Length: 255
Image 1: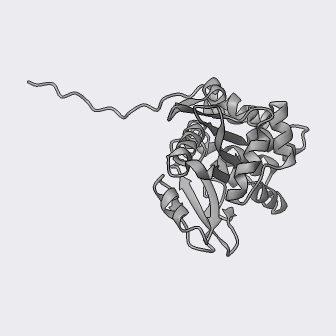
Image 2: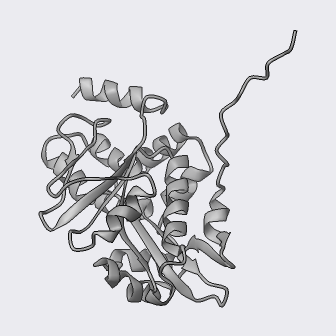
Image 3: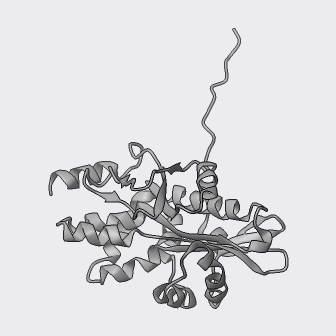
C-alpha cells in the first residue's frame, strides 16, 4: 500500500532582533532599523506621507531606545513578550512607554543613501480614550503590543515604482506578525486613490470614508477611526490561536 505523505503547513521563518538592526538584503540595498542621526533624512521623506517624526521619536532614535520593547519581543515567545512589557509599566508614565513600542525601518540603496522610510507606532489616541472610558491601564496598554499604526510610509520620488515601498511594508508586516500583533492599521488621504490598490495588494482591507476598525480582541466598544478626509486600511489576524487571547477574554469579564 502506497504511503501518503502528510502535507504540512509552511513554517514562518524566525526573525532575530539583530536582523532588524543589521537589515535584510533588498534590491542591492538594505531594509533595516533607523540609526542615530538618520532621523533628519527620514523627516525629509515623510512629509510626502503627511507626517514627520516627532521630538520623542527623534530623541529615542539618537538614544537607541526606539523599538526596544519590540526588539526584546523578537527574542522570546509571545506570552513572555507581553509579560515583560506589562511588568515594565509598573510605576512608569504610560505615555512614555509607547516610544519603545514603535518601529522605524528605512530603505538604503547600494550607495548607502536612505531612500525610503516606514514608521509604525502604537494607536496612542485610542489607548488614551480607553483609559478615559474606564478600561484598566493594563487593558488599554495591551493595544501597544497588539495593534500597530502605520503612521507614515514614504519613498524618495526618484525611486518610486521600484518596489521599495512594498519591501518596507513587507518587512514591517513580518516583524509584527512574529510578535503576535492582531492588526496593522493606518489611513491615507482620500485624494490618494492609488494607495488603495497599494494596500489592497498587500492584503489590507481598505475602508470607506468614515469607516472604523473594530478591535474585537479588547472589547466590543474599542474602535479606531479617522476623519472624513481619510480612508483607513487594516490587516487583521485571527486571534483564536494566540496564547494570550484567553487571558484578555477573562480580563474583560472581570471588568
